[in-house]
Length: 113
Image (tube, rainbow, N blue to C red):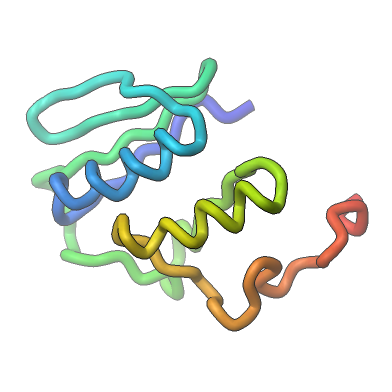
């Protein structure tokens, strides 16, 4: 099972605002805080954002090798819609806006089996 995710970010204050809002809405609570990072936890799993001096680039490109995206369970469709409606006010944008809410995946979750 997943233990933790660590994301290196170029702007820690912005990442704390954006990730803190999203993870809080998903039920995570603040977990750790240090000069260059923060984390939020739900059960045994936590997510870290850190502004590391060892980064070799200023931005992330999901088309390069490495992490493409993260997807979270967010509850019933009405909760997902509410989250999506609030997200732009907190620095988020849909990955594929014109395909919301399925972004290329099956419309019926039973098709995922």
